[in-house]
Length: 520
Image (cartoon, rainbow, N blue to C red; front, side, top):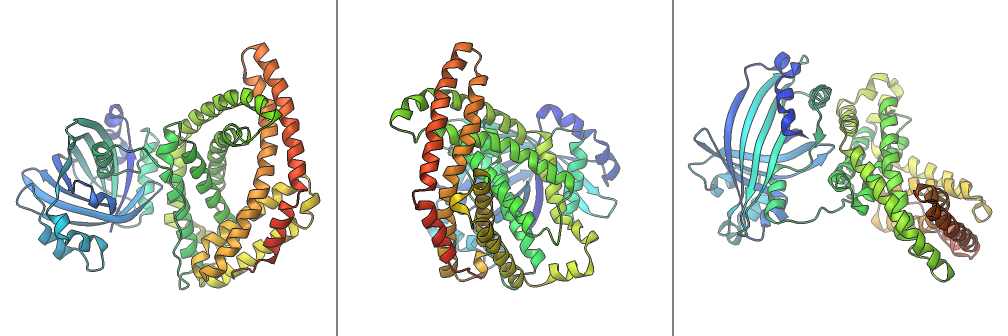
């Protein structure tokens, strides 16, 4: 299993990296410079890519080497993939040699055995890279290969010549602890502006050969095992949340995709909920907690304006529709501004440091340094008792907060909504430990309750934003006009929220949840 960290840098910053004192202090030998030419092959309909695999043949210093990468994960810039490599006589892959090297249980082996696949392989794109390699040894004795790649990816598979530049660093763990990768990266970041890289050259090449829009990444189901310890499950949950956060980074960085902002924010909220769930056993350092709050704020502002413009105002009809239409354009303008600010946040060195710091904390498990003997025993205990206790506690908290739900203030309803959301996240985290037919109805009723409470919360957010909206206009007459429209819509929404709070739907959703059986 290959474990590497990928970081992007501007081409003009490469000299700063080469001169970085860390490389001079930890490199075991002088850097090696290689000229590489890679040929990536696939079927015309990109079957290998569809199965999350990449097959290349590389020429380096007159030698040909084939490499197959498949499966694995990307979390916070840390790439973990299966890799098989070997010499070949020329620029064509040797599938027989790969078949011998791949384990029998690997799905990619069966795919490459299909005649329709083997016979259809052809070049899809190429890369031409100058690679500089440093072999590092940290003070703790960890062996890390630091690679600077600069060059170009080229494709003309459909008759249209396209290219994209490459300027990136790869830190690959050769021996030792994965946490050391993040120590090196954080040290380099102090002097060189870096961004986390989430796409391999193969992924970038495929996007070049077959252009496609970036898609928002939703949370993937967790597959937990009852034999896992509490600590192992925490690491699995945190990694799953970070995959969702980092998977939407490029979409948010584009500055326009509404769903990427939403899903990245959901991933961050899931992570913060998970940290709260395990806080009696491990605590996130205050500096990282503060940085997560900063990132959540940047994403939250963009999301709030998206919901106002694209959902709350868009749903209004009747007399309010005219006033809502007048407000929508100004609200969309504010949403675009907040999207630009969110894009600036996720492409900043501050975001990079935050994600690297989180991953380093997870890899090093430094919380054990301050754990009591009792806490260590609980971390090492099997997960099922902890999961059942957590779900029971979350349900009790939600039921307690919801006792006066029908006559609650907006602030009290908000606390119920947050409790419902945390209960749902916890249930989804632990879902694979319980029988599906018990989990699904429970989550369904929680979701229905959240939907009812969510609209009422949207109204409260809309009220706050509509008060701010006129002041964002430069022209005084525009301010006066929007203020008048906003006043009417705020009143309309308040009346509608009051009616919805008493029309029986929320009461029904609450009664159905209370009657639901806890999966645990």
